[in-house]
Image (cartoon, rainbow, N blue to C red; front, side, top):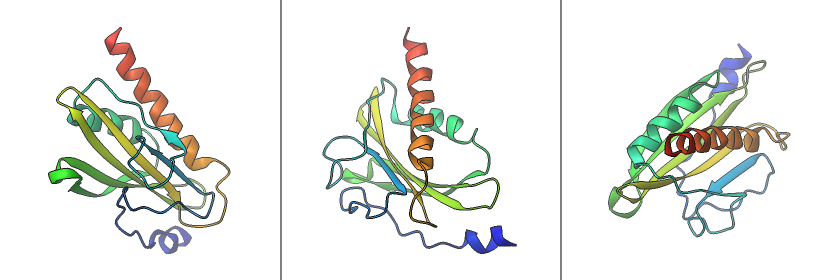
Length: 150
């Protein structure tokens, strides 16, 4: 029952360019330099794969986490060339929903990058959970793409 009550949170559409620096420390922002109006917590790397391949690989890693689902998808960015998806990851014990917004961007035909905002809706601190989630996914993604290139 508590899980159902916690599930109904307000999730405004995120625009990375106008997203304001969070006041609470329960958010982790990873983005390419210059995308956000403030320096992100983590700079995004570039990957030597297409945007479509990046989406597929990211979701393979992200959906391997328990209690994870896709909520929405929309096209955004210059001329609608970027894909932005919103996911929810629910904590195992109590069911706290964390929202993870990911924008997948093409740099050119064979290179892409992504921006991530992982945020908790309840509480003030998250004990590093959002940063840990972002770093886990990024480390797996870097490993998967670098192993292929070697």
